Length: 288
Image (cartoon, rainbow, N blue to C red; front, top):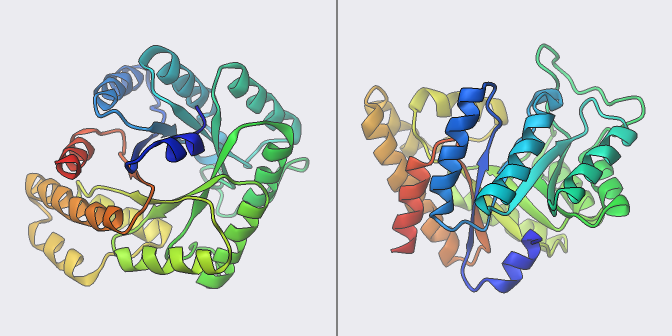
């Protein structure tokens, strides 16, 4: 089923979960055990990332195909511009559609490991908006694109980045999933501004449950998201107590999601880091 149809048919917010392809067979076994646990939460869909430079392309496609066929999870594959010609992208889209996958996330992607800047394939695409337009013209897939409530780290300012997002929607995107954020005011300001720009597709907030202090600091430095002062202070005080950090992260994300839902978001997209425990507890809290 196309994810936009899920939004239309559901009277409640749709919960979704993002995973990344493991590098080993042992990791794949563990991932599918996690996916079977996630299935019990009755999510709307899962998404599977692509890896820098498309390094995990084959595993990404394998996971979404198996998750849908073997477990019954509606699945969305990430697809990036990095390293792909138009012909290769056509082949990937054909494989997805022939396998019954109806959803794809169109992303520019990160440079391959060891490279500091993005370089498009000579017969490929430079921007996610170009990839989105190509997918829309070539296939019937439902397309998600990425949005950045605090602005993309490479963009000179928020307005420039949000104008680029509008271009992606105009190119054919069906909905937006945001980068992680920890201050809901950033999301609400972003959402309001996109509506002012006449963007009417669903905007889904992306939430990352905090499970490790040092890890979340690294993530936010990489993606440009900020950690609010009170949150940073609280985490610093318990940073070496992993259990306390995880519990704090569950409570913080639960409050964050509850406010977002109260304000009418159509869904919540959880960045799981291939772990289900914190996400499961957050979803259970919200459903109570």
